Image 1: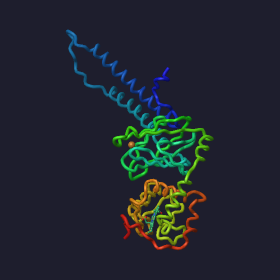
Image 2 (image 1 turned 90 degrees about the horizontal axis):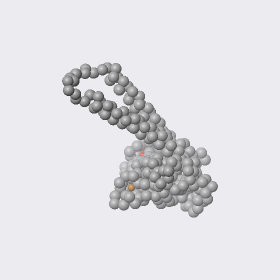
Image 3 (image 1 turned 45 degrees about the horizontal axis):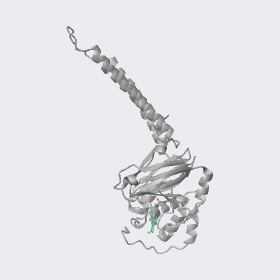
Image 4 (image 1 turned 135 degrees about the horizontal axis):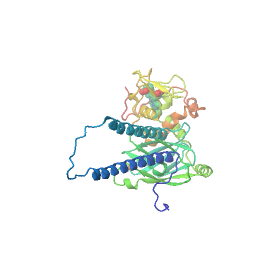
Length: 335
Ligand SMILES: [Cu+2]
């Protein structure tokens, strides 16, 4: 009956059902309250209407009544709060071994790159049943990655990463919208998520690629001279980056931060912001020298160094002797 007039978008992710259940609960609670209030308004209007010979008398208030209508709503709101928090944290925390996709938004398109190296524009192919983590940034203004069928929406900001994840549960093609007004052609900033059966997806993935994103990153790491300071022994001027990702890092000012994607990103663009304990702030900034895509590749590479059997372990062998450091001139922060 509702086929031509769907009340809800497709429910195509593992979170969709949870979000809808909470939403339906909110509608029911609101509906009941509306009914209660309107009934009371009508009833009291009739019951206490002005009549000849009846004198209104002042009521002084009732503690039990006030307690009742304070405590019952408190419990209802606590249920909404706790339930909402559970759904929120589940929807916000990417499971540990999610597949990673890097997203770069710009006026007015979505650029997506799989960790395996496949690049897409305004289209994202994923297999059904796999956890997918999106690591997103914008190259200009604020955008928002919105997939109604997944009940997933996350702002995409310039200058930092934001993260979202989903597990698609139903093969099909679903709308991707930009949900943050971003200029003249904002409404055209749309795309689709194509959810495929695993076998189909493997076939799709075997199509042409320039190699894994981390391998691209390794190349850039060598080209930009990162490798001259970041060696895999302890002789470099910068820290050894093996196994840095995901670990706590002690800074010069005594703080400890976790080396997540945003930390690696900031280390490259604004190295002076957080100086690693025991090192001099000699790393030049690479702001303006690397594109968002190259930055993503570098981040993917540094991450790969923390995986068992790290891909980049051979980098040191390629670059055995300490080469003289040539710092990039533009916007350099060398002291
Ligand atoms: Cu946009």
